[in-house]
Length: 134
Figure 1 (tube, rainbow, N blue to C red):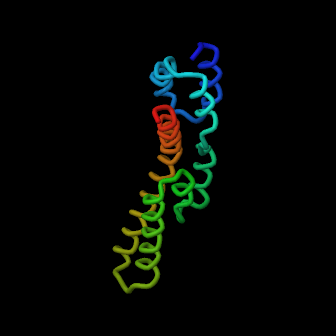
Figure 2: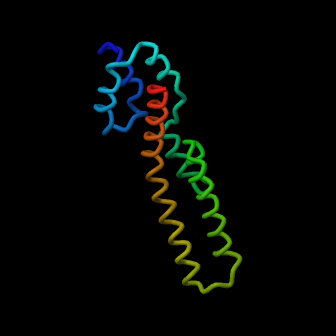
Figure 3: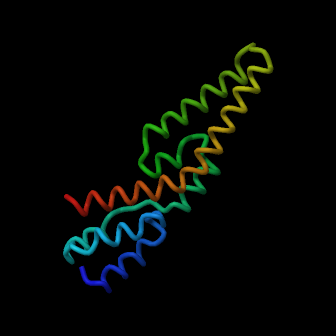
């Protein structure tokens, strides 16, 4: 591709590709054709900011993971939420165990919320590379 086409593509994909990967991605774009450029622009990507908002408001349902097409992680998050609700509300366990379960859930929720932004960008990059090399 021409330099101006590569710059235009990188400008369009600025918020989609992880910043650490841009220079390596630029090198991969050089030998590609204009047709591949059009295919890359047609790739459906997820917005990382939307994934972050979904993780904050609906993360307990795993919606942020389903949005970025990580279905297994989304299902695991739904299962973890259900397990936490059952342990915390429906069982006669010791209160210390209940609160440890709730603390574990809160830690997982916060970590998943934090990583959903980065995960979204890496999933987008993977989808773009799939188009580039197929």
